[in-house]
Length: 80
Image (cartoon, rainbow, N blue to C red):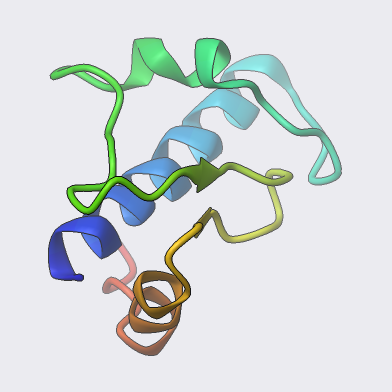
């Protein structure tokens, strides 16, 4: 769960950088291809074979394994 939560956090950061770089509105949804350049070690994958939903810039990403998403929401990363 912790690894997946870390990946979801990486999506949050990638979406933020993508939105800044493209002057994207909070309602816009980037694709996996849009975000891939923001991952130095390649696109993140759930270690338990869940699938990720990116969502809009303003939404938190989700894992298809509900427990992973709930853990992520309950343990938010510190603000930079």
